[in-house]
Image (cartoon, rainbow over all chains, first blue to last red):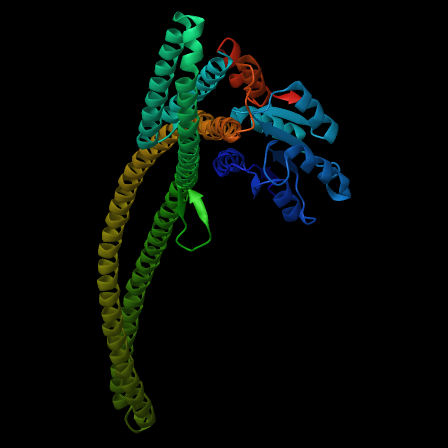
Length: 122
Length: 382
């Protein structure tokens, strides 16, 4: 059965780009336009990994990961932060919130897929 | 003089921002918006040059004259402020329009690209397969060829088996024909025995007549024996006729069957030849298809590599959008400051640039602000 990856980004084109790469590798993709939208779409369903932007309207990526980790169902769901943000301070905030990896855009699809398969539980 | 510096600083910020906007929009958006911004940049630079010229002239005249010239300069500053307050919202709107249009078009492009990728993948997965005629699913073309070949070979085998059965049957009929020869001989024997018996009965009748009254009874017996021998002779004759009829029918059947068997043998031989030629052509076609399929797979790998590159390229929209959002934000901050009549002392340009820089998120923006060269990013695992 295909693994499900949620992509959270306010840029629809970026979501589409990530989705193309993931679907090409056999993953199912669930999209959300910001942290708030992502939390509302989770609703207990099985998500194997989340890829989230940092700077988003309504709820930013760091806050989203903090909120996500409060939910026991997603406490151990790996999160990759995918962002243009490269400040070390931001990375530390992401790590502290519970993110497992930090990818700076633009990403190489092969590199991203490698990180996804590495973080998704077998 | 302080007022002059302040206005000059404002114009520097404005011009810098306008130049950044023009470059970004020309790079990433439609031509119309870029031309609009470029025109506004020219106007701003013209005002800036005019103001600079005025400032130079003011610096060249004696102090007393400067006091007299303050009034026109202040008036000019006011016009510049008013111009910026009018122009900045327009630029801001154009930037947002360009950003949203680019976002929309890139999204459409990504959607179409996604559909194209899916289409290619479906085509590749379908190549080299064929639907089974019995609806039991799909198989690859080479397996189908092998199955067809096996099926046709089985048909030829069945033909050969049937032909063998016919030959066996002919052999049996030939044996039967031999039996009819024996029957004919036996019928002849019956006829001979009847003739001998008839002759014997005739002799007996003669001897009975010679015996006179004493041989009268024997003459009756001899006559009955003669009648029986006559009947036996006729029976033997009918038997021979029937056996000859049967033998003729068997010979006719044997001849026809032999002819059919020869025709069948020839037909099987020709069928086998046609099937072999057909399979040979089919194998050649399948080999061509297999070669084309391998080439297609190689092409798909190349396309996959290209897709990876395109995916990287398509991400420029997200980055461009963020740059434009920062420019717009800084523009609005500048507009708010210019529109605020209570602000009499504008900040130091370096301080302003530092504040702009603090809002940068991308490494390119930071590097652009320093040496213009961005470093390649990698994934950081925690």
